[in-house]
Length: 208
Image (cartoon, rainbow, N blue to C red):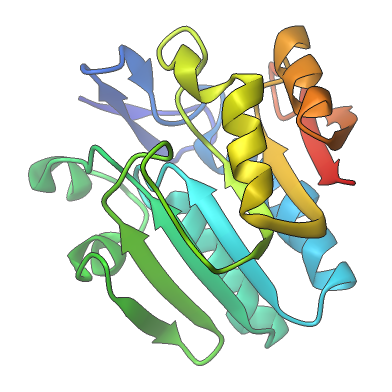
C-alpha cells in the first residue's frame, strides 16, 4: 500500500512487518535529518572517502539521496546495502521519487551509479552477512524493534561494530533507551540529536 506522507513524499506499508518504511510525518524530512545530516554530512567532513553500510535498502530512498549528495559535493561514496526482503516490483513504481533505476540494478554486483557513487545491493540478512571490507558510516534503518527485535540487541550491534573502522559512525532513527544501552555496550559513544517532525530524538553513535 502506497501512502503520501506529510512532506509530500510517498512511503510503503509492509504487511510482513506491519510497519511503514518511512515516517508518515515526512519521508524526506526523516531521511535527510537522520541519514544525510547526522550521517553523511558528518562523514564527509571526517573522512576523505566514505564507505557506507546500510541495514535495510527498503524503498531505496536513502541510497538515492546519498547518490545525489555525493554528486553535488563531488566526493567518492561507496555504498553497500543489505536487504533480505526486497520490495515487490509493482510497489516500487508507486513511489513519487525516482528510485526505479536503483531497484532495477542487479544484486550482488558493485555498480557505478554516477561518477562519485557506487552501489552494491546484497540480498542477505545482517546476521548472515560477512565482509572483509570495513565501513566508516552505517545507516541503521531496520524496521522498528517492535517488528524486528533481533536487530536491536547488544549482540547485533557488536556484529555491526566488527564491520566498522574505529571512529566510524552509525546513525539511526530509533532512540529507545535500551537501544542506546545496547550501542554503548557494543563500544559506541552515543549522541542524542533533535529528530525530524514528531520525533523527539534520533541517534548518532561513534565507535570508540
